[in-house]
Image (cartoon, rainbow, N blue to C red; front, side, top):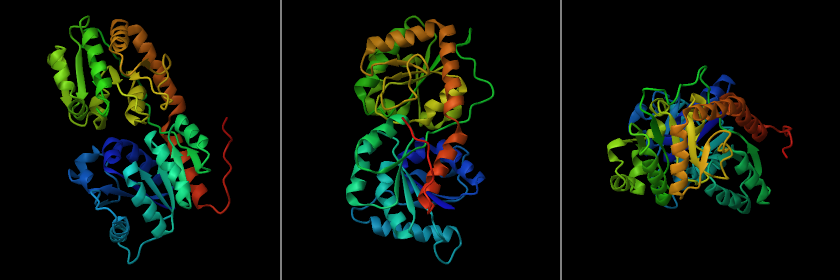
Amino acid sequence: MHTLILADALFASRERALLSRLEIGLADEGVRVLHAIPESASRSGPALFGGEVFTRAVTYPDRAIPFTTGLRARVLLASIARALQADELPDIDVVHVFGGSAWPLGLELARRAGAGVVLEVWRSGLIAQARTLRLRGDADVLLAAPDTAAERALLADGSGSTVRLTPWGVYTPPEPREILRPGRAPAIMLIGTGLDAKAVHACFAGIAEAAKSAPDLLVFADALTARRSGAWAIAGKLGLRDRLSLIEELESRRDLLVQGDILVQPEARGEQRSVILEAMAAGMAVAAAADPMVHILQGGVTCRLAPSHDASAWSRVIGEMLQNPVATRELARRGRDYIRENRRASEHVRTVLAAYQWLTSAEPIAFASRS
């Protein structure tokens, strides 16, 4: 089986570790994988991928002129043939698209290559976009839901689209990190898009209040999140700047991020983020905005939850986590156990491979019914 994985710039940057794990797992199962990476995301070269460089990759222009999807698809297919040192394009069985802005290109590539297409519905905003596929009559399209909440929403829309649950997974280290160690300054790692400024501001206000009882607290925040939301100015008004460090592409720097004690996600945007899985697997505690579209965020089981715009709730959640390290370590242990049991990287590969086989097999593959 030959699979082309097509990612848009946002997904290629944020989820490169996920894509790398998926490639390795599929290759172990005998799948030949080629990646198509946006030019804007590849300009920094292999460093972009943090050491997880894809074995075979081509680039495509992602700053598209309207009505040029067909041309871009033709050029990309020619690039694929050159990369594989083939006189003509080898058979492509599946085009797997990550990132909504790449859906039109992925559908056109699949049409031209005679391949099936898998569209990853990784955020709630793509659910409505997926409904239009049925109206357009695109054939051999499978919608991959990386979370049970997304799966339910896709199945409930009544469009009749084929949906498969493909839960994202990570590797769980043999031993967890010891968080909130005595004699060591506690560290918060804050991630997000920064598009919900009110949510980020409320979270910063809550952290600032909690910090009054934790004079050595350090806060590391994604730089883009802070810029988009105006959080740097808010931090100045809250007297938090002397504790705050902004890190470029913090979410992509997993080796650095998991050195923290508490991962904080202040926005509820219905987005799946593998960094939360990795943080839990590493033994970090997680505090997040309550989000019904993200099943992994289970209050009291895998994390602590707060209403996204409630500063007092964030103050209470962060304050209690810092002041009661024993309970916070226990929460982190439960989150890690949940990931180890329910979100394994091997299971992600298995469900994706089953989806590919469903698309390419003449005989439907039986899937267990889900309640």
